[in-house]
Length: 246
Image 1 (cartoon, one colour):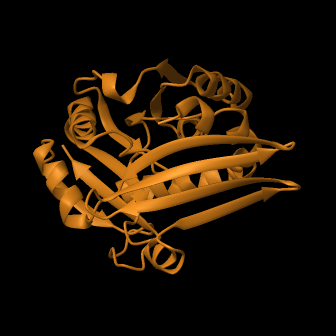
Image 2 (cartoon, rainbow, N blue to C red):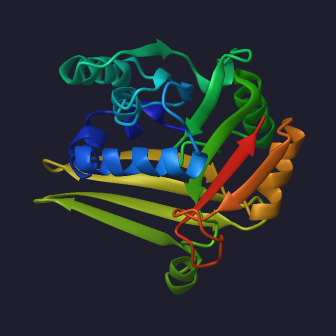
């Protein structure tokens, strides 16, 4: 996983313009509705990225701890929190090193931020989310649907390709699905000011029964799946959302 290449200056240039304050507000509202979160809860946002959800949730009365491995993102998050006049406890912590013990009423992993390591590591991360919660606490996990890109993969020589343009520049995301591993292997190529950069990553895809088994194995007493609006998860759903209860 080429973290620095994926989330460096090219990320700011190509991706950040689409992550508007309006979108962050809308997604924070979705989190609250799907998770059944109540104001003044202690909430963990992990990974929090550049704080676009954590700061909104803090503005709505949640006591938020945001963790991320990227100090640059954390600096951006703290700066925005200052501009908004909100308090968020931002900490530099890798998901693989989370060591919280029954400190939160809720936790969120949003915007396809889970599944980037091998299965053993990802299972361990899921157990760490569970240990971070108090009894009855809720963990909300948002991921791509495993079925989302399959029509494109079948139609395009077993590849799904996304192209994002910014004037004369472009970012090309090429994904190939390993059906046996249930994992997309991807390469992101950015062409900016005539210079090309490449970054590789892979992400695990889950069917509903499989991710529910993972939640049970991680120690959650209950777990259910839904689509991005809280309805029934189907092959047409854009997102796979899981709500687990400690």
